Image (cartoon, rainbow, N blue to C red):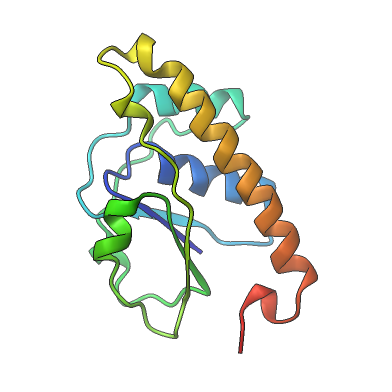
Length: 143
């Protein structure tokens, strides 16, 4: 599965790490952005609260994955949804509108509560999604 957001600096990085952790090896998760930026310090901090480490990861442009096959491509923001390319193999496109936590205020300390909310929202969605793909035929894909 591939998680996309504009900057690949917070939401999609958190989603990738949580999917890998919560999937217990049953899913392969990646993340990318349409305009990558460095990983936000609050993303690293909040991910640690969820038991995952983003330290040492880097942001990637979605073009890096254009020739890979994915069963599911999950966009996490409205902007990247508008520019999401097609991926080979007919990946199921899913959209989860998760607000950008870095837009909430000007300082890292002020934005931290928004990062916590975004991470909790993403974790909840991934937990439900993992149950769905493991309990439906074809891994949740429609034929």
